[in-house]
Image 1: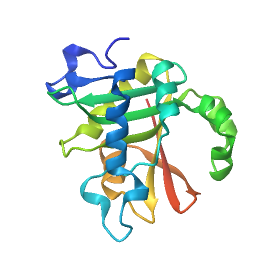
Image 2: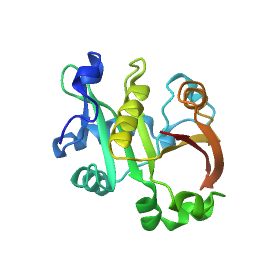
Image 3: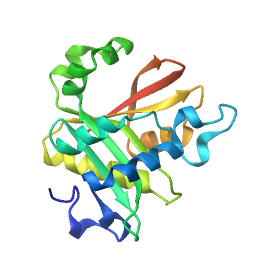
Length: 198
């Protein structure tokens, strides 16, 4: 599978952004463990890193790699040593809802609003390195993939409680012109849902 963004448009670090392969699974899991919400001290401000992630099981990662570019897309970033330092996992929203119908019932988003549009859903993004702009680069790669595959909108969710991921919220609103359309509870956590036209 081709790189999710054109090589001729990539700065040096962005050229290391690519679709995940089976050999990248352990690296993805390692990154995930470093930013899991369940491992964070709720009294600490997470704003410095900008990354807070919920757990992705190994079988979900494996499935995403198998179907990369179909029902889901798993994009990674590697450093100059070839180690995974960040990942982004996204789904076709209608296929996600079909497998996870409880998600829609938790939000106040109309099923009619989602059903007549082709929407890519950025579910997870994380990095274990303080590389400036790495999250933005992954999201831009996802947007490029989405446009190439005729998606109409990008939807993302961000943790808003009990830890508020303010850095990510500011980036989505100020830099990507995302609009908040919903908020929902999942266990002890609250997530905001943001969307933009592509």
